[in-house]
Length: 334
Ligand SMILES: [Zn+2]
Image (tube, rainbow, N blue to C red):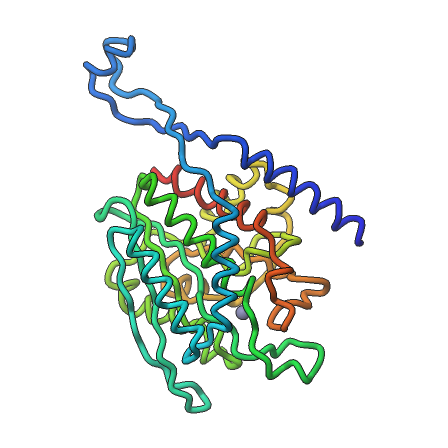
C-alpha cells in the first residue's frame, strides 16, 4: 500500500512538472473578416480560420502561498477573527482582478440558537451578458474536528488547509489568469460561506442556499463546477455520484478534458464517491453543478474534519492539476 502510494506521488510530480514547462495552447475558431483572411493567404472564400491563442499557465507556487496565507489567518469559523481577515483578503484581492465584485451578507440562526453573520463573495469575469459558467468553493472552515478518532480532539477547530483553503486558493489563482487573459465566455465565482458549520446539515450549505434563493434563481448560471478538498497530497478525483446523476454531460466533459491533459489516473471515470455538498442544492434547484472532490483524505479518510487537515498534508502539485483542468474547461468554453 505504501509503495503504491509512493509510485503514484512520483507519477504526479512527473506529470505536473511536464505540464508546468509545457505551454498550454488552445485552438480557438475565430471569425476573421474576409480581407484579413486574404492577407494571411487564406482562400478567397474563407470566412473563418483557426488561430492559436496561448492561455496563461496556472501558477502552482502562488496558489500554494494562498493556501498557506488562509491557514495563517487561523480557523475561518463564522464569527472568528480569522473569518473576518479572510473575508477582507478575498474582497481586496478580487477587486484588483475582476470587473465586478459584490458581497452577499446574510444571517442564519443555527439549530442551537447561534446567530451567524455570513457573507458570500461573488466576482465576475468575461462578457457581462450571455450565459455564464459558475465556479464555486467554500471559504469557511469546520468549527469542530468532529471526525477525530481521539475524543479529546473533537472540540478543536479544523485548520482547513484542504477543506476550505484549497478550493479558495485554486479559484484565486484562476482569477489572476482570467484577469491576465479574459475567458471567452462569462465566468462567475462564488466563494460560499457557511458550507461547513454543522454538525446538523440544517446548518450547512448555507451560502449555496442563499445564492440560489437570490442570484441563482433570478439569473441562473448555465452550469457550475464546485471545488472542495482539492489539495490532498495523495490526490484522487473519482466521479462524484450526485454530479453524475444531476450533471452527467458536464462530468463527461471535465473528466474527458482531465484525461486529455494526462491526468486520467487521478480522475478515474470508473470509480465513484457520493458526497453531500453545496452542489446538491444547485442540482435540486435545476442548475447542473459538478463537484470535483477528493473524499479520501489521508489513510482511511482519517484527515477529514480532524486536526490533521494541515498544510503538510496538501500539495501545490494537486492544486496545479485541478487548476489546469478547470482552466482548460473555461478557455474551451465557447
Ligand atoms: Zn468539510
